[in-house]
Image (cartoon, rainbow, N blue to C red; front, side, top):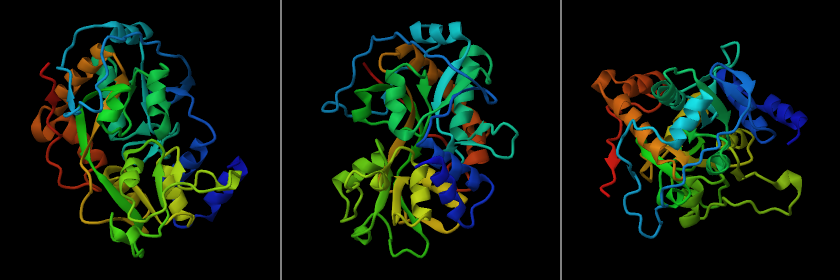
Amino acid sequence: MTRAEVWAARGRLRGWGGVTGMAVACALTASLTLLPLTHGGGSSGGESTGQGATSAVAAKADSCTDPEASLAPSSADGPAIRKIRERGKLIAGVDQNSFQWGYRNPETETGTLEGFDIDLVRAIAKDILGDPDAVIFRAIPTNQRIAALENDRVDVVVRTMTINCKRLEQVSFSTAYFQAGQQVLAPKESTITGYDTSLAGKRVCTAEGSTAYEALEKESYGATFKDENDGTEQDLDQLTVPNQLDCLVRLQLGEVDAVVTDNALAAGQAAQDPAVELKGDKPFTTEYYGVAAKLGADDLVARVNKVLVDYRQGGADSPWMRSYRTWLATGLPGITAPPAPKYRTN
């Protein structure tokens, strides 16, 4: 899309305002350019991480039986931690257009990044550097989360990223900090009833590199979820998009019939647009989000796990529960505690 097309499309949307209008603009422009580096409250800058930790051996998908099990928590220094301290900033890969998770608040002068994931990033920065604002936020699309770590563009990715065996071959994960699952999002008046045969013949949008796309590859129920085009520009990226929120835009424009994504993200999108809703009684998968780091950055992973121990403590008054009540309780009610951590035994 050209910039003119972006704003023309935005102008065709109806009933979108406030946070939603901001999110649409972010989602559509994400395919044009990535957000420059931003420091804490929003000033721009740039640098690379250059992490050198390479000690860990990747977990193999064919022998991975408990992907949520991570390293024991530790506050010990190592090469990745020292690199962050020498720089004086934690570089975090985040989302900027997932309402309630990581999004730019249009009511602030600088469009401050806010949300559940952002709170966790600040907790990590405070523990390592003593300052929750000692963060360089780098907005990255869904399909670039792993590449951003591999290419040393970020220290961590805190972006609703599901832990699984396949990804453990490419990055390292902390213990789980949130439980989610895949679910279908569609217009309220749609005949789609969930992840079932009602998807037959429907156009379904997912984000490239997402677990939703992998789920549809295993069982699509007759839905069309892969782009079939002649290679011309106007046919590209209608069903498989770089950023998950792009799917909601496609849905609003009538270019797709449904979206498959994490219920945690879909709940935020339903809050943005009252014309859509989650379909089905519950998610059809169980997935856990983790903080991702470069493969081999064991000291950083163990430090994040130590941060998460503190973040979970305190029961109803824990930092985790306070963040949940602030950002997620309305759309995802009934959660009484974070997922319990699992640690490797060898």
